[in-house]
Length: 252
Ligand code: PGA
Image 1 (cartoon, rainbow, N blue to C red):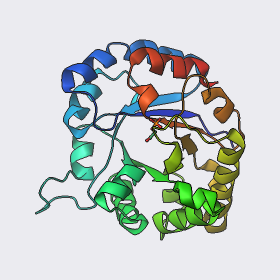
Image 2: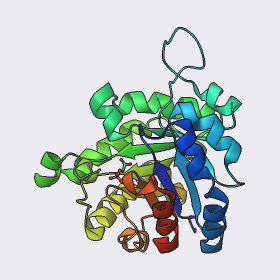
Image 3: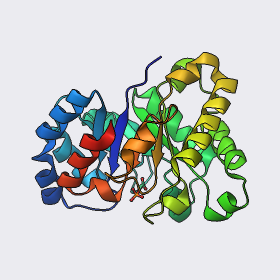
């Protein structure tokens, strides 16, 4: 089973619409290079920029939200639903990023509801997991991440599970310039695939698992060369179009 490599830029709370549009001027060039390399690419802007970025996105260039609410509509002030994303042509959403877990108290069980809501609308969840430095130093990474996977994927069918993309991002590697070694990343990602196999059998071979945390043009190739690592979720290095182009160039 060959899983197409996926490079997704997470812009976090950066870029006003004019800046997002200026990035997208380079999108056709990016898409052409990605297609030559045989990889899938995309970016996750803020809700505010989604529609404008989507309008400029070439075919196959993924535009993802960074979060979503689990309900379709109703009295949830400040929230955006999967139905609304679909209505403007958005088909991916990042779920459970460690910054949302930390600052917004999101739990894996809450993420599970969001994942189900996205799948019900035909959208692709990019489900994030990853351990803190203390957990890493205590040697408890695999156990910790396994629980996040079990809770996030709870009650999904095989058909649903294979549509989810997982992003393993050690918290201590995010925005710190201190990336995980490719051996550590591969070890944890292969353990994640192991848990998915327990739940979903051979379907786990179809689920893409990305690495995230200080991925840069000078280290992306090493990660993507690992057998279980199917791409990267990239923050800082995805913001400038030049750097994003370099990530694509160096990816495979
Ligand atoms: P970083 O962020 O690449 O800046 O470390 C990754 C992420 O948070 O998704």
